[in-house]
Length: 412
Image 1 (tube, rainbow, N blue to C red):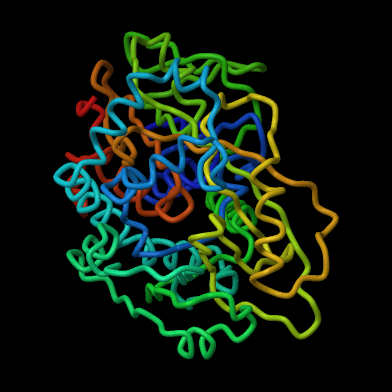
Image 2 (spheres, rainbow, N blue to C red):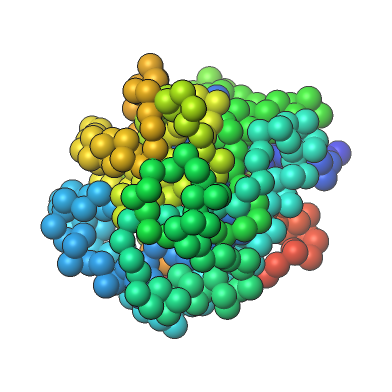
């Protein structure tokens, strides 16, 4: 009899874990209240990059704190009551921004992210959707000169982990992206990997393949996890599932299902927004581009030019605040020729974030056969398939491709 597992959460992480377990012969049920990739995995910038190893909290970020504290900076907005409730998280977040801790976290993230592109390519081969992926690398562009940028934490972390990076002059940037306006004084091209033209469609196609090989998806509300003498009962809104093992991959909803089991994990929410624009006739963009000084990322997608905002630190389900989107609109229009917004409404979502910028991947500390895979912050789409592979290896009792020690829940 195959081992039964219930994977809770059908975003990039949950779908990927379910598929890897199904491929290894497990009897897998994937559960989510919404269709796959309807929440956090829906609204990202689509970047698949081996260079996404630098945690947001690092020594460079500390230098920007005075600007962020104004609560007017487009990169970071916050609600004071939320930060007060998250005081211990904030304290740890700033502690992890120190050089030694940030280097260690970047090294751990590099192990995870270095294999992310190949893990996606394997899934794309299975699902037959490799046409969604464009391998042009990731481009960061600057409106202001950055003296001594080679000494920045970002550049040092990328060099330490042997990333293929080219610093671009103005002519080189123009050759690479002729559609960009001449407002940028240079850029940094992180080569290898690229971007997805429709992240939610990609993950849903992975989920469709999972179902096609015998996996089961149930769209129901998840009420509780109830440990039994052997295994677990998963209480849904319409039925109860008996299972041997459980994987919690619920992103920013993970804590509410785990708190009744005695887990108090320091998970915060980094909210984000996106909007789509039409490119003007004759305008083009070939990379996912991070306008660092404009504090947004733009990526050419099926739906149009997707532009994602900076971070908003606020309660997961608080009312939307479109101030960051409104502020970035004229900046995008400065950067590239547009023909207005598409008809799609602005989107808002929440990223699950631990104070050290790393996810939890591995076994729960208090229950056997309960497994965690959440807290991926800004890299959930990027690292879904590799996270699923590592967790499936661990659950199968196999050696994992990389050590999971740096991603253990015991670090908290």
